[in-house]
Length: 375
Image (cartoon, rainbow, N blue to C red; front, side):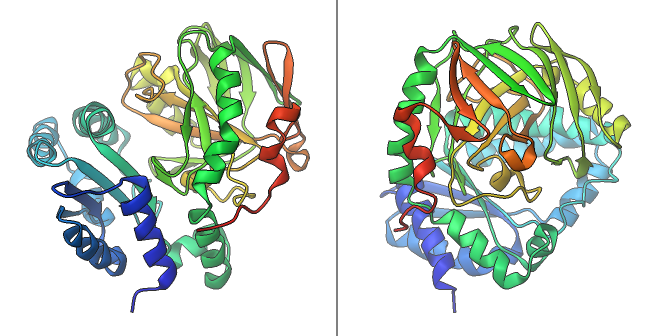
């Protein structure tokens, strides 16, 4: 029998996030491990008079395809997937982190080819700009292990974050959106950060359960050539199956000119040097979900933490687009709370956030309600 909490997640995705309606053609890309919720979603999509499709993409099989891949293979894979996407209206990516390190030992040149000839054209040129889409996390025992939690504690944490009342959260973010939309310059200061950039060219976008589950952030694309200064990130980040701790980035005129990390330096170099656009920022965002409080090295959760900010190196989001086109979109999180040595975020000389707490009276509702009512 399907866990009632998973049913609630599926209902949120289909009814609220994507508003599935009569005639919609819905593609779900997932793994066999998600079959319980997948079966329910297929049934519910059909009951709405929509048409469900499923593409199983097992991580271990994907690993072998990339590990042994060629340009010709990735181009053919792209054409095959494009032919499917041309015939759907909605795309759901349901992630099951069976082994988050499956890609860690795939040769860097193979991953670069995959990013360039398959991932970038499929995700950044078709799915994101042309379809209604969402990325949804799925709870598993291996995820609990990765979070360093018991299965019970992890499930409670997972479902609490997933079932945040996103309508209420969106209302609370409107004032922050207005502030960002009329802002021109952001400065971030902490014991390990001295960083600034402009936000004159793009408007911000609220993410409240319509892009990811869990969700809860407000993003804006920095002016492409405006970032200057340095950030030593205090939250470990994982990308392409590799962990990076104490990631250091120095920017000049929008571009990364110096980088370092505690280990995996060669992996970091490969990611940044494989595409010039990977050295530029496509997104800056505040985390706003009050039900996510501690980083767990799962980006869908970490980037939503209230009291954090993140930047994304690489491709810019179509919701706030500074024109950067790259082969990656790598979200990297920094905590600003006192437990992580604190810091300040300033917009146009006004102190907006200090030690992870929003300062202006108009923004304080984002701080006050630690646990929002759930549907």
